[in-house]
Image 1: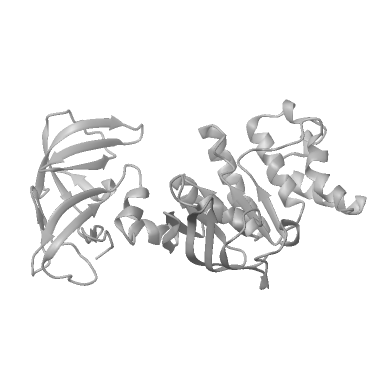
Image 2: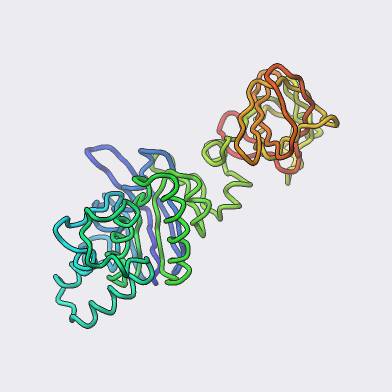
Length: 350
């Protein structure tokens, strides 16, 4: 395992800045996830670490060595792409071992590495098959195995599960988590899927517009988003945002809303945006606010109940047997200890 350090990294493609003055340190053995919407620069950043995209300025260090201008083959990385990119005429075994054979690795060592990777990825019985005889999930396992046999210092994953259906994505997500626990290798993973990020990551890097918005553990990023973008990007259903104001005593008020957020510091009287997640909104007779039910979404083990309150729409998760109908007025309460406050001008957390 090795650390990866990026310092003042700038990447320009077609004359357009993609990454701007980015600093990031990935610790040895960490599973770091780059999360963000399409076009935010996360895949470009990963490809730059791999040596597939040149940087305009800045430095890339892998394992304490400057790799800014090194060829991909010199960087000690193994990469898994969104596309399986398997050779259709080769068997699973030959696909996994191809890079090692080209590099002149001894046959006994190739056999050891292929057998080890195949066992980890449950490919033992499939080594003689061709890619056309495999399912999508099995093909992606082969692509992962091809990277594993390199026994690299750092493994890079560029949205490897996005071409799979929901069931296969969930299965391979668990396998990747277990694989990281087994290997203890440094892994950097790109995705736009917040579920993948929350379940896989040791730390999440949320990106937007070629810049890092927040770095932290999944719980930290979810519970204490640094700004409104991060707060709105994580969570399903998404966090509700309510425009209002704080008074000198720290009470937040808006049409239909009044509560004292339990925040670390009193920001003083000023305009503010209150952010509240559905799991922190409880429908009940003792709630201090009321709203009109606009939509009910059955989700199997719970309901998502959407309510209109003043000018805002908030959602609540209901896990019991209660039923609601559109047009019904209900009382609800907000957990004041779990809300977020944002500056309406900058979007930053207050």
